[in-house]
Amino acid sequence: MGSRKLDKISGTYIDLFSGCGGFSLGLGNAGWQGIFAVEKDPMAFDTFRHNLIDGDKYNHFDWPQWLPKQATTIQEILKNYSEQLSNLKGKVDLIAGGPPCQGFSLAGRRNAKDPRNKLSDEYINMVKLISPKYLVLENVRGFNSTFKDSEGNKEKQPYSMVVKARLEKLGYKVFTDYVHSENYGVPQKRTRFIMVGIRKDLVTKVVNPFELLESLRSDFLGNKKLPLKPVSVKQAIGDLETSKSELIYHSGSEKSGFKQIQYKPPAYLNAYQKQMRKGLNGSQPNSLRIARHKPVTIAKFKLVQSLCEPGKGLSDEHKATLGTKKQVISVLNSKEPSRTLTTLPDDLLHYSEPRILTVRENARIQSFPDDFVFRGKYTTGGMRRTQECPRYTQVGNAVPPFLGEVLGELIYQIKEAY
Image (spheres, rainbow, N blue to C red):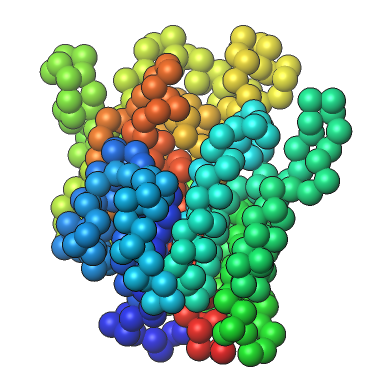
């Protein structure tokens, strides 16, 4: 892997449920050429388009003229462009995607009947029509866990095995396993359930993708000059602390509006920070806006930091002391990778400052480079939370680009092995 140059195209791919572009960014950095991507949320697609379609830094797509560059759904594309999709049959190397997973998430309220659970059906319908050579499906750990029905009885099999059986029926040899993002340079304990499919007519010998993935780890990290030991939160975002920077006006009123740090690179950047900043050429990253916490909120966060063991969730006793019913709230441990990011910014507090993280800090923890620009509003509240995808949500939902990149390298190596 170490000798392969990125000017050699690994193959072509389609990204389904692309979000703001973490998977595509990683695949592109591994040498893959995008055909098109599908994302239904306008905010997330705006970020995707700005960086990966129209941008001059990460333009990984040779977008077809017949498909508008706009937010849409797989269902709409299947309905309106079935002839054009049929013309792609057998000509696409890879379909990648991470169907929305809130109904499966172990971090939230798991719901077997969440309609988003069935979005993997759309992924399967696209696979059936296009018949790519390879598949990669990324999801939360809960995708491979069983639910309990209304009477408390466990279902016979997790939904992942239903999807696996359907893909096998379409003619794929399917492998599944859990992948720990922190093993591939992502400063976050983000365990994901990964499904790799290889079209059966291409299978000439037994190659376990996940054993191959583990064998790529050392070279992958070495090429980025990253250590085998997981990157800690402080190594990832220590240069973004407010205490180390001047605070300047961001938006709103001059007196009480939002502020951001005036970022100046420290004299020493560690290996991870160098990776994050290498495309900036001295310019400022975006999305550095600092939350405007009320004094009572700051006091509460200080209390949480005093009670909570770093890296662990608050106990029920501590939640009672704080008078909170939040399912998840914890303080980052500066010496370890972050806990899994969610779409709710107040689930995780900074390790040394009484505040939530900025979008850029979350992006660093997801392994998005500093020159990747996030667009749209920062947060959404109330009923709009399930209907919109602002910046914090875009980052929280994303596939970490480093994970997408090593999975792209994996599929390339599988292609070479057969």
